[in-house]
Image (cartoon, rainbow, N blue to C red; front, top):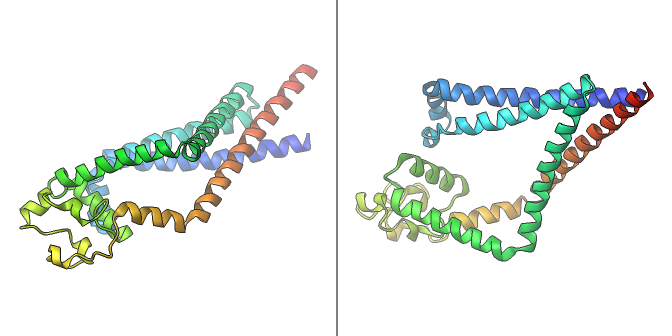
Amino acid sequence: MGCFKFLKIMMFCVNFIILLGGGAVLGVGIWIKVDGGSFLDILAKLAPELQQMVQVGYLCIAIGSFLVIVGFLGCYGAMKENKCMLMIFFIIILLIFIAQVAGAVVILAFSGLADIFIRYIEIGAVKSIKEEYGKTSEITAIWTAVMKEFKCCGFNSYKDFMYSPFFNESSSMYPQECCNGQFQCKSNDIKTSLPGCYKAFLKYLKSNTMIVGIVALGIAILEIGAMAASMTMYCQIQKLEKVA
């Protein structure tokens, strides 16, 4: 019984942290949607190029709600020794784990499909630059932020910006990021050593492979631990009910 009580307390503590974190994320999402003006003012001071991205509120609400539900199921199921809640919690974590494993298998086993997927991303990304960069503030802000962060230019290269709204309206100019911040960025000023953002992003992932792997392994261990704990409690409660 001592082990069971310890497991019960650990289940409650871990899921209570998840519940609080989900509540915080949900609160931020609701605040963004209710008082978007204040959010924009703060975001403009921290990262002016991202102040158009108000839709992040919906993402926060979705993630926060999911974490609150999972945390509540774990907390309530552990403290009240509720088999139904523990089983639902187990199933949710199991589905997430299966989805992660399935995604990893697809990426590893079907590299051809991955190439097709990347090709579709490339078509959409280049199209957004050709048709929207310099015209739609949200798209312009996103691409500007990406190029600044990864020190890159375009999806494949600076040529992606040719005949875009920005290019046409600025007398054949390119974004400053393609010339390392130079105000007037013309074709002869382009830093050809700057990679496209796709290559820069792949390089970034490769340089952080160990970190990504450790994080993925840590998440998998936590999920397995959560499933084992919830199922152990479920079985123990069932045994106690039979004895009673």
